[in-house]
Length: 197
Image 1 (cartoon, rainbow, N blue to C red):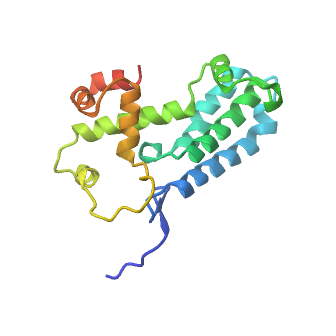
Image 2: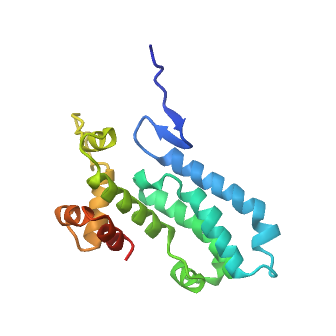
């Protein structure tokens, strides 16, 4: 069977790019999330008679899951992060009743609404998946693909960030090396405690 080579394709709701980047997938996530925002902004988010708690329940149950679907495997660029944060804060500012003109910091808005940042949530999901990969049997196809090293000439310039290098940075930010984290990841409960502390 001859398979056609394509630039990108949709698999289980996730857009896979031939280049290995995730820009189009993240753009699609943001676009779908903004569709939800515009469909409920006037009829729901803007309604004063609807409690903040109810609005935040919808944020947690609908808005955030659409934005972050499949985020476990993302490699985020600075630009991706900025766009994701802008989409996150669009909803949260509206619920808090402020605009950009009020110059209220995003951290303060999240604190007032009792919610963590979406980027922090994404990092937790990625580390959770990293731990799952560590515990996975070496014969599993997913594990074998993850550990495979592709032999190719590296282009000039700064090396592109990989999923592993992003995970390593996240581990270092939590005070653990790759090897130290591997030991913790063996115990599912301990790993969960480490990731979600």
